[in-house]
Image 1 (tube, rainbow over the protein chains, first blue to last red):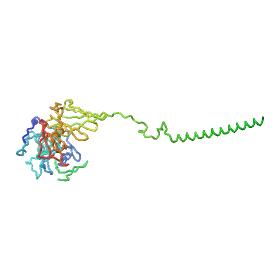
Image 2 (tube, rainbow over the protein chains, first blue to last red):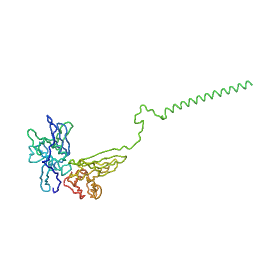
Image 3 (cartoon, helix red, strand yellow):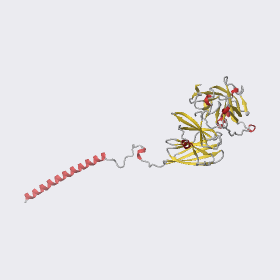
Image 4 (cartoon, rainbow over the protein chains, first blue to last red):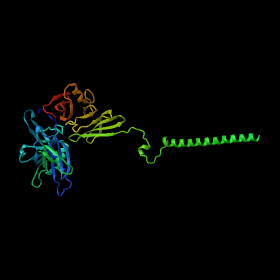
Length: 183
Length: 218
């Protein structure tokens, strides 16, 4: 878009993995919900809220509602796309969780990730991804499945990715998972 | 002679009798009057029994300072802006401080404003490069949006930039609804109102103090 941004240095060779304190058995059921109306992400462990954070989704409805699953996590990656005045090329986008479903395949590149180039969370800002503050994205990245084992971690049959539900409008009640009232 | 003495005695006896009757009647009157007065006039030392505690003693009004603290970390977690308010009577003083991770707080500015106003720290207060932040001065009539340097360095015009004032000078017809946050390190997003709905949005470029109208409305 013709604007230059200062890019954070991320040396993946020196990146340390989070320490896992014990392993819960049975593992809690994790689920991420994104409410497009309120621009809020909720992360649940069973029926308990783990994280609530303001996000920035795609402008002009470019984040498609639906049921997704995380298929790969990357500590950092370059993101480029768009065209003309809308083109972007952003290195070292931190804490990236790519998600997909049958209608939105992996090569479309939708993800939840940290955004260092703006601070306007709670308002639509992106080209379709779910932008978060770096500190919030780091928490989700370290919490969500698949469990981080490398700087790039794919889901597997033994460690499937955390489900992601994106709704146009959401209903929430304490003690239970949110439900989409407009998909 | 005996007759005269007898007459005087009778007169004196009658006088004494009537005087006694008058005194007794007067005393009774006084007694009744006192009783009546005791029943109607307020008691000087009221009984404390069965009285609510609050009515027994009237506290002398004294200034009760109200302390508030608002803070917000930068998106990468490395910086924090803190607004500490202390109320004293009809005024409240806010100390604006910036804390860099693992370093002591640094005083940036101090506001003294009316107690019915407030300094607010928005969620998107920090610029993406952590070099600037903005605060909201909430008054009864409107909100002022103030930009500060994170180091406390003054702008050419003073310790902060008042976006609301600069916007008014531009004579743009749409009133400011809010400043939502930072589109980039040097660009704040100003949202406006038009016919009670979302009006055009603007970028406010801090370095040039200019406003640029956007095609999209926040």
